Image 1 (cartoon, rainbow, N blue to C red):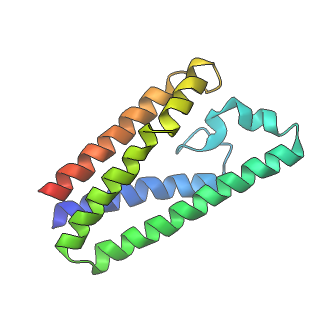
Image 2 (image 1 turned 45 degrees about the vertical axis):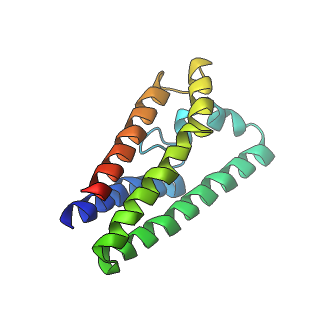
Length: 140
């Protein structure tokens, strides 16, 4: 029971850092903000496009915040079976990253549109580790 809560809490803390970065420092290169993409700075030359990108960034941050608050409710109020099922659901949902997002971020990385270079490999590895942690904690 404690392992499930620890894994969910660590995920919440890491993702909360991303939410804060997206809301308050979206151009940052830390906490998986969008400053790693060279297009972020380029978009500032076109206010209409930059506003659209900011809208999407804030939308993602808001969706993540909803998700994180639901996870907090699961930690505090759900029974062990619900917490385990939540971890398995997290694993499945997180795995979707490798369907659409990873190929795109990998392509941008190879095309020199991401700084630092090979960031996609680090991000993909980090997400894979999360998926494994969710599955292990959900099964144990």
